[in-house]
Image 1 (cartoon, rainbow, N blue to C red):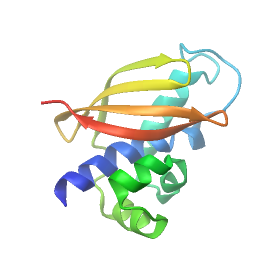
Image 2: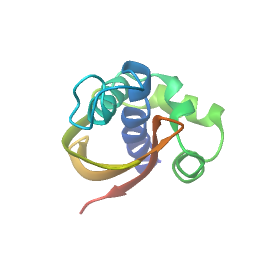
Image 3: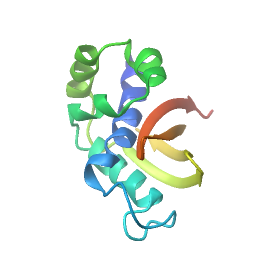
Image 4: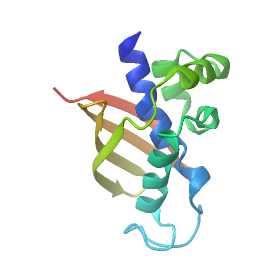
Length: 128
């Protein structure tokens, strides 16, 4: 259960960026609401514990990390710790992004995909 909550914290951080940044304009360097700026905003919002993140997960993330439904996701968001995601690096390659981060002091790699012009959380891999 602890691992699932940690994975959710990462998911929260990344999935919420779309709510805090424009989805159009700018470039991949973060200027004018570009991809990197949207991803960083997603992480900031995830650190604030908002259940709206459940709407910004791919089906794969919802099934593999949350257990499949929005109600379970919202409950886990409510139980997750705030301010535990620290970004180390962001790499954007087309409609895929990789974020190297620390989650509550543990290394992780987070994958996002852009669907319909919005970044969505797709997967979390622990780095040991």
